Image (tube, one colour):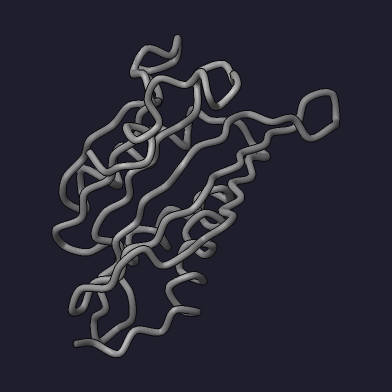
Length: 160
């Protein structure tokens, strides 16, 4: 079993989002595993901007192409905050992390919530450090209601 550095894995998540927000996509290219898969969607798949949100890209070239296009058409400043990051599993040279995602933009010179969601990440430990094997982003889009009235929760937090 690989010797995982949980702090380095957590830092990887923050490093990813900071560079994404600042448009340093060349940095992100160096963080992708050769067999990476990046996906995003809303929990229902029926958001008015689902076409802009939804993705399923395999391999660094496809993943980076979608990421570049998505970032180019997103606002700036944009701030992704990964919170409640925790290690969900460790398998050999892979480590799974989960977190909440809180995204803001600036509207009328004030921070404004753009989105929230849940992120599942698998990192692979290599000789050069961690590389992103998979990232699954599930953005919130349903109206909040009393938890007792929610018909399905598990579909929001389980991997596709």
